[in-house]
Image (cartoon, rainbow, N blue to C red; front, top):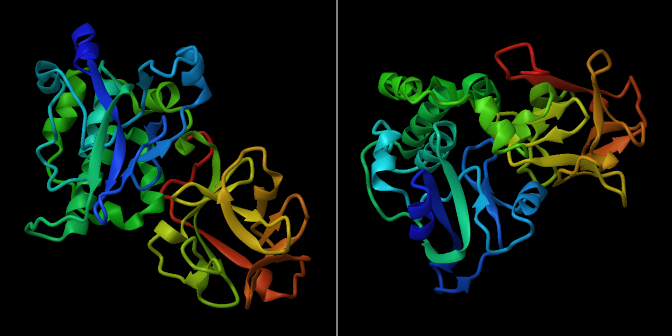
Length: 332
């Protein structure tokens, strides 16, 4: 890690991080990966994309460019760290500081790499420290500082998924906004297009919001056992984004799909070429129609299924209520 920085002081180096269980100290070696970012702004592991395999000529020891990183372990040139603004001192406890550093590094002249030949084992444990204030409010404020300083027009997508976040004050952002101007940092669109082209935020969307059954006050919910739960109106588990291509995505980037074995509607990993994941929303009829089978989504008592479309059946009707502040979606 230090050797890589000695060769280029603007590189932030990250090891492959293996896991140690807090329950029984079990050691789990992590496979080769980079780090991405879903809607909730908490990093996730992702497979090394084909573009990086090509760039590194399939060299499994070569440094891998990563969009973000786990905040627990990295190395950075001390002077470079302060030149690009160190940490945002308006953030408290933990959460978002690793994402903010990664975005700022990439957008303001540096780079971030995972070094496969460096491994660090991390003890994943339940937090035991105490602090003043509500932890959810504090971490949401951290997120808001990240969103409002760095995400440009893409911030509307986050607030569509988590409408309540926008109501939490972010604090004084003057210093961070001026820092971005002073460093002449690139746009968030540049970051997505050049560093994280796999991001779902680059897809074209036609709708975003909650999907409510007209038969009762219940909404599609990714966490519910049968995909239906009482409508709560705060997005998150009940947020679904409809792409121009026809996918219905959740915040954790799963897609609503029609099962190939039976008429049940399920959640599966999104795959652009999977026709079972493609749907149309008919606003006039209030139908969610499965493109491949031409059947309609139904709020059945046993769960969510697909069935022949029938204009007289209220259980086939859905209200897709937008949580996006701006009307324009496609080509944001």
